[in-house]
Amino acid sequence: MATLEIARRKRDQQPLHSLTYRLASRRVLHERSIGSLVPVAGFSFLAAVSSQFFQLGVFGLFKGTFSLYTFILATTYFVFGSLLLGLRNARVKVNPRLSPTYFHDLLAISSDPLSWVLVSFYVISTSVLHALILAPSSNSFANFSELVVFINEKGIPQINERYILTRTFSIIFGVAYGVRHLIYQKDWLAFPEIQLSTVDYIFNNYWKQVVSSAGAFSLRITGAFWIVYNILLSRLLVNSAMRFVADDILYHAPQYGPRWYSIGLATRLFFTSFSITIFLESIHLVCDHFLSKNMNVSGSSIDPNACLISGLKVDGSNITPETLLTYHAFQELAHLAGHSPARRRDIFNDAGSSPSSWTQISSHCIVLLKKAATRINTVPAKPSSASASKPTTAALGSTVRRRLPPGQGGAFETNIFRPSKHDHFFDSLKGLSTEEILAKSRAEAAKDATKASSTVTPKDRLELIAFRWISNKVKELALKYPDLQRHLSVIPEKEILRSTDDFHLILWAFQSLARLVAASYDEDRYGVVQKDIPKVLESMLELLMTLESFLLAEAGSAKFRSNPYSAHINAQRLTITRSYAMLQALKTAIYQIVVAFRDQLGEFTLASAYANRLKHFVDFDE
Image (cartoon, rainbow, N blue to C red):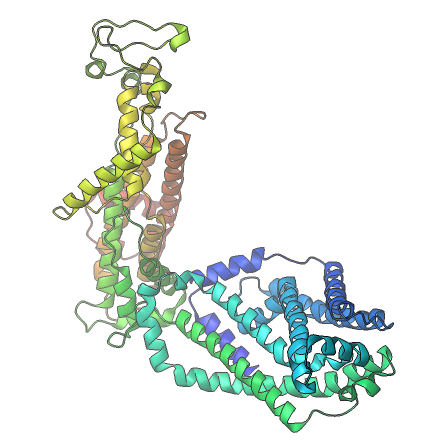
C-alpha cells in the first residue's frame, strides 16, 4: 500500500494537462461498463461451463461431477468478478478524473470480460498441453492411444488444475497488464524521436530506484498471494470441492489430498510470481517517471525551466502540424502558471541568468500572439454583394453570348465563335481523372519543393497543393457561369482556414502570460515581470482588437446550406467559433491583469490605441 500511496502522490504532482492523463480520464469516464451483476454472473457461468465442457467433454468423462464442479467454479468467478467490479465502480464514482495507476490497471483488467476470456483460453490450452506433453513424459507413454487409455482409466483429475493455474494465471495476468499499460502510453510511443533523450535520462538515473521500489512491492504482494493461495485455495477450497465432486478422486489422484505443497513446488511458485510482479512493477514505475519528467530532458540540460523553454520555440506557422513537444510545453506552462507556486517562484527568482527564464517565456508567447494577429489580419475582406453578383468581364471575354437549350443545361455559352467542347458545366468537371489530378498535384508539389529551398516559405503538404490546384481549375470554369461565380465568391480563402489552426497554442500562451503576471504581484520579489507588463498587455490587446475586427467583418457573410462547398463554409464557421472563444478567453486574461495591477496601471506606458482599449477594462472593473 505504501507503493500505491507513493504512486498516488506522484500522480497528484503530475501536470493535469498531460496528454496521457486526458486520454485516461476520457477512458475512465466513457469506459464500457458492465452495468449490473447479472451479465457478470452470466459470463462467469459461461466461462466455467465452456472450460469444464472442454476438459471433461473431450475425454468423455461425464461421471456426474460436471454440474457441481461447474457450479463451484462459476460461483468463484461470480464472487471475484463482482468484488472487482464494485471496487472499480466505487473508485470511478469517488473521483472519475484519476490518472491510470497500478491499482486502476488491476481493477480494469480483472473486471474486464475480455481478460477473463483470455485467462480461460490459456487455462484450457495449458490443460491440453499438460495432458498431451507433461502426462506422457511423466508416465512413459509410447503413443497417443496409451494416453487416451490412461486418461479414461485415471480420469481428468490426473491433470492438476492447481499446477496449471499457478504457472499460467500470473503470466496471463502480466501479459494483460502490460498490454493495457502500453495502450495508455500509446501517445508517446508514437513519437520516439522526440522522447529518446528523456528515456535515456530516466534509465540512467532512476533504474536503481525503480528496481528497489519494484522489488519491495513485489516481495510484499507475492508473499501475500503465495500465503493466501496455499492456505485458502490449496488447503480449503480445492480439497473441499474435490471431496464434494467425487469420492474416488483421492484414490486416483492423491495429489488432491489435504497436504501442503512440497518445498520445491512452493519455491518455484514464489519465485515465478515474484519475477513476473517485479517486471510489471518496474514497467509501471518507469512509465510514471517518464510521464512526470519534463520534455526534452538530456544529461546536459536537466533544468525544468530550460526544458520548458526549449519546447516553447515555435515558428508560428501552421502549414505543418506542431510537434508533440511544443504542445506539451505550452500545456505545462499553462498548468504551472496557474497551479504550481513553486515552479512560478523558480521563474520569478531566475533574475541572474541572461536572458532570464521569464524573458524567454514571455518573448516566445508574445511572438506567438503577434504572429497569430498577423495571420488573422491577412484574411481577405469579404466581397460586397454587388461585386459578388457581377461576373468578371475580362474573364468572360465574349461580345456575343447566347443561352444553350434547356436540354443542354441552359447556361450561357462563353463565345459562339469558339464554342467549348463541353456543353454542360458538370460535363466539364469530368475532363480529368483522379490519377491525372494527383499526377499534376505531385508535379506542382515537386516544383514547390525546389522553390522552398531558396525561400523562407515552408513547404506545403501534397493535400494542400491538390486542393489549391482543384480550386483554381474549378474557379476558372466557374467564371463562365455567373450564378456559380456568385456562390463561389463567399467561399473562404485558404488564409481564413489557417488563421486559427494554432487555437490551443494561442489560448495557452495568453492564459499563461496572464496567470504569471497576476501571480507576480505577490510572488515576484525582484521585479522581473513588472517591467515587461506593457509588452504583454500590448500583445494581448493587439490580438483582441484583431479578433474583434475579424469577427465584425465576418458577421455579415452570406451562408448557404446545400452546395458542393459546404465543408469550407463549415470550416469558416469553425474559424469564427474559435475566434469568438479566443476573444472571450482573452478578455478574461486581460481582466486578471487589470484586477491584480489596478493601482499601478497608470504607471505603464502603452500606445494610444492600446491605452484607449485598455481603459474599457479599467472602467468596467471600477
